[in-house]
Length: 264
Image (cartoon, rainbow, N blue to C red; front, side):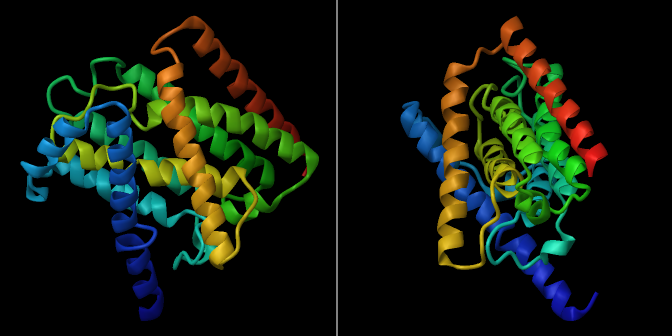
């Protein structure tokens, strides 16, 4: 790797679409949801009276994994070349960040409403929704997957998109109790951009490296984040119907992906 490539990858990891972007956009999403839930006062006190230096090892690992996942996005002007981005790496990093946050949460804040089984099931369904179209396309490059417009692949993406949205709130740890300090709030916030924008990168048509591409990518990602916020309030915490729907969508995604890959 040349010095130029190293500099571009470092820029992507630290600034855009990496750590700084992940934190700024994620904290903005958390703040907006806090206002809607009338938790603004408590969240503000928590953030003001905590310091970034108090981040635990698990929290720092989660931030690093979230930043790495963000570098895999098919975002406009991403310094990482399109040929070097991987949907698989992005999904693994988001899942790893979720487990780091869950394991490092203080008290019972992350364990109060869902145990590890619920998080694991959600992450498996969410990952399948992203990797199913990748297997069918024969590539893990987000831009290449998104560019395929064959009817069978579009049907697969539609089914995978439903599975993705239904699993997204749990992947974002929105079914857990509110964070208790700056560390938890910052690390949970870091999940928003990579978890939502991976869906934009893989399941929706690709965007160009121009102003229109930036606007479209931002609007689509914001729409996915808004859908996740709405689903947080509509979906049951537990329920046989909800689990059955996830199983049916997962089976349909697997079946369509296998069929499409055999035809490729």
